[in-house]
Length: 353
Figure 1 (spheres, one colour):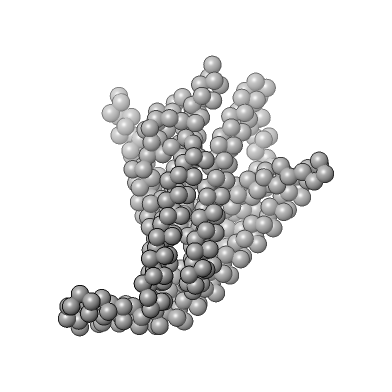
Figure 2: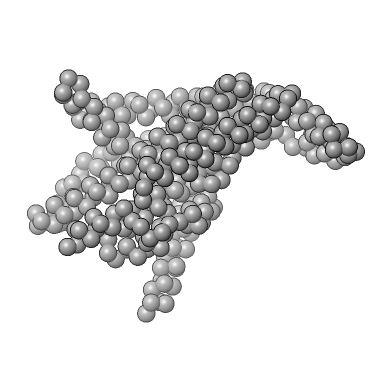
């Protein structure tokens, strides 16, 4: 019976990912809209905690402020990325020439004869062409803004009727109270995780910007925002976030010192944030197996591409948090966890008793 259950679970998982890949054009904007709606909800909660003269802001005003903040942030990021990608595309030929010169210098230092294939390969690799394709990809995502906005409106409107649906499903007051209490705890755990992740990624981006600006790297703000975003991709994101600005520094300056400063500085920041500060703040809320995160990265990346890579950690952590609250799925949460410790375990057990 257990073998049949395992086989059924594997079949459902593979079928789910197949359908997710098949319906990417419809489901991905819906998931992005859901993520934005959750960010708005988290901001409403955070702004609602602010008191002015001992008085909290009205809920409607906190919602308006949260929406304005989200729209302003996305607009600024998109505009900044567009401007800096255009600048990097313009400077790409210069960077490519500097890279060829740096490779020739390395060959001379090593006493090796310059291989003609190196120059030919570099000429075939068009950095500006690659960045233009990247800009087209970003434009394609921006083209989905309309459908994402429509989904977002309907999700926000649907939230207003969610409470009444729960009351209709569970007519007994005791059941209603238990369900609402459980949902509140789950929402709080997820909100805490997202808040800490955004905070640590922001600190990483700001500190990296200070290093890049101090060295004088071109488009420091662009690389800082890119580092902030890539921090949501486990392992690979941190490596790319360090490699890209370091390589740009290598081809921008004539000396090696700026390259080593940027590479060592950003690596140190990534290590302190990712290996020291974030685990202390997260506690057991990010107690997810590294192997599970890598598998999740590969799966969601193959299903939804780059957006899937950004969403893989939040989705996996949310699955672990939600599953840990139910006795039927608690075993799955333990398997996905790093050491079997679950932050929601005590709550779940207490509620069961």
